[in-house]
Length: 487
Image: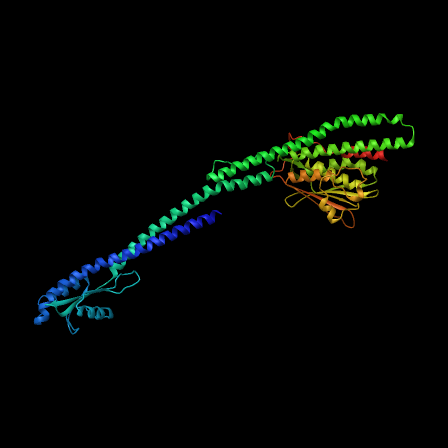
């Protein structure tokens, strides 16, 4: 945009300079030619006044020496020609040319003439002046001078170079002015683009300076800031509502569960106890759902603060935490790492919660005799964590929906879960500028890969953070207790 504006300004300036400079250059060349022509006509007229007696009496008198001195002093060739076209008194260097012959014909007809009309820098023809010699209205002959045009051409060239230099200075001034003007016009747009990217990357406090540029763009910047304030306020209100609603519902839900649990001893028939157990399970499912909503709301509300963590250490702790549940379900859970440590730069608890969600799903769906392998390596200028399982896996269409909120595969609708684990993991990974990808395992199962950027300067311990992001809903202990109760 800036380049196009500058080119348009520059093109307009060049057109104006050409339109004004070309006539001026032609005027300068014509003026200098007219000055020399007037001087030569004056000299030729003087010689014509002296040549009249010479042509009538056939005596050269002092005219011969005059022409010789004139040529020696000014390097201008001259000749006195009779009415027959013969040079009666030529200067020593006189030579006939096509231009002198044409000028002589005009002069012998009784008219003074000169050529060329203008001397151009690229034309080296001499300046020819012819004046008729009259005696009582009778043309006796003519005086012709042929002046070299070198001096005129140098003068015209000097004027043209000065004119071109002035035009070049004007063009440079125009370029500088155009850059300044384009910068002044486009600076609000450039800043608006930068702030838009900052807001898209999570910095919802970024705003545009609304005191730059033309009034129209100032109003646009002010409108954008107002829109950003409104959108930010709406998002804060929405997330606060979800967090508050989830939090406020936990207490009455806990009280409801206690009351439902107290009804158990009063139930005597088998069908009533079965319905009572189903009510308790639905209450636990609702509690899990509310915890997931609260975790998701807080994860989305986080700012782009980063901490440096050792991914190997975090993976070891999460595998150790999920080992009892895997052993209870007859699933082999193992950890494979390369040279430790492997550092990653993430938002707080991103690796913890992402691994919890992936290991939970892998152990849950692998079934008895299944295998879950967690791998931590450093590659692609970052940290890569893989969770491989031997479960049923997912189809390509299911992989595209796996991180949507509350989405669950049709064949696992009766399995415990709220459908928020992968959503929370995806939010935290995206907030860390990382990537979460999933693809089928061979020969069966699923491979979930987490990539987090490496820190600029690795540290030996995790940095502290004041962000309050709770652990993922449920967790290995809750999953184990639920499995024991349902088992």
